[in-house]
Image 1 (spheres, rainbow, N blue to C red):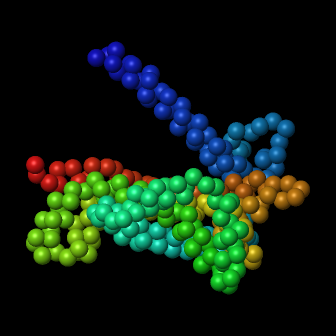
Image 2 (image 1 turned 180 degrees about the horizontal axis):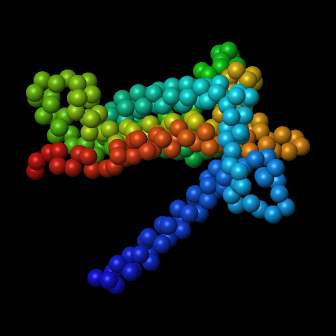
Image 3 (image 1 turned 90 degrees about the vertical axis):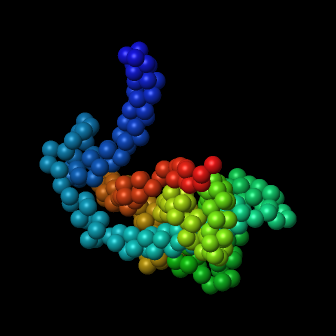
Length: 277
């Protein structure tokens, strides 16, 4: 027994701990830098902890920059993108998992293969489309762009979750007088909630972190999002490390809090035992 515990500790827990530390060290260093005074950031000898921690960098970011407006823009764009992706993917994925139609396999392959190509290939066509629709330098251009390249993967992810829900539940609900729409919203969606939340988080983070399209499609300070704002701290002659790290920590908080509050939903097997054999 002790031998198995030691083997598990050696093969699983120690590597997991090392990987976690490796992943958290950059975040920890960014936080330490964000609370350092300016004169302790650039020093001949590395200071691993400031002698007098300060929140001056955070106050500067919030009060003297466009960070609040950029945060609001990112929240609107990411939230709308997530809602669009979830709403469309629910109906599409349910149809794929429950119905058989001509071209279904080809369409599934197309959805998956669309993720093989880099986004840079579609940035010029999308730019031309947005210009023709007079959507450049608006939040709508970012919402539609992010939805266009997040939606195929979100649909493909949800197909697997819906396919794991026994169709016997659909048939039982139909016999009891439930319509197809009622089956979807009253039976399938509650059981597929973990999958829906997982895909919603993916769509949100994808939109929250995106930089390339935000740079191309927005040209004024009123429409810039957080990734573009973070890039502004990198100047031609230097980098404002204190402000950059403070803004980065603040930018990461919504995603961290999202995982903290929704992690209990990110589990599988919710439909296990839903149908008696």
